[in-house]
Length: 94
Image (cartoon, rainbow, N blue to C red; front, side, top):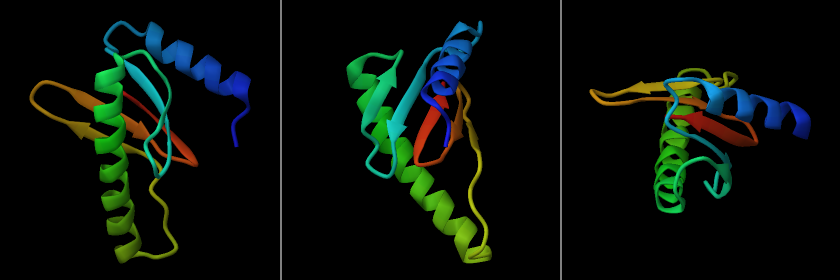
């Protein structure tokens, strides 16, 4: 488990990157927002949707090999790229 200082350091480093529009730290599996650089409304939407996406992806991984774990998920659309790092909580950047 990461220490609070490591989490804060990573969060700050991600926000400072030029092309990052936002960073969200949320609980898993509930998707409750712990910290976010996005608006409250957008954070809640992303938190809920990303939590659901992580559950589907993890189930897909486990159906292939029940001893395997999802470590990272990257979603690219025509407009955005979302990078998700799941754990007991998860962080993602848009």
